[in-house]
Length: 141
Image (cartoon, rainbow, N blue to C red; front, side, top):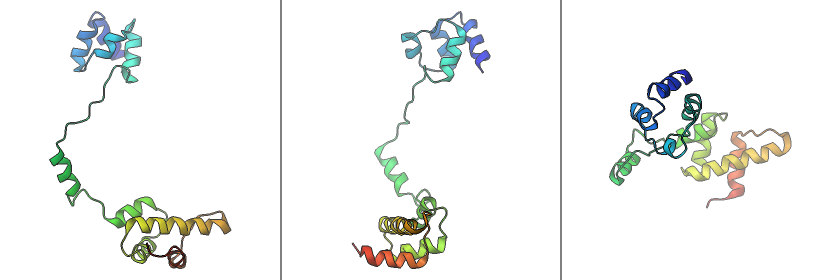
């Protein structure tokens, strides 16, 4: 890739605007900090020195629609599995039920149970008994 960019630089006669026109990119950064040769241009271009990130334009309505879309939303159990990949799904479900279906409280419950279990063993684990005990200790909020 370096060689191809250096060749492009040389083929364009070291003309920054011509190079960036062929790349379909904005030359502003390269014009402000012009590279002295093709090798340095290729290196800096690949490192992102001459590129800009432009966030895609999205209307408020499309963002709201995407957030409401059922097919893009994760279920609470999917979130819990992502957050606690080493915990059995049955235990995650029990913790979720113990927290009356509140995701934030379920996470707090699981983290607290893991913390207290690690005090004795230096290994964070959770079992079903821990969840109920911790929930009674924390109390409903």
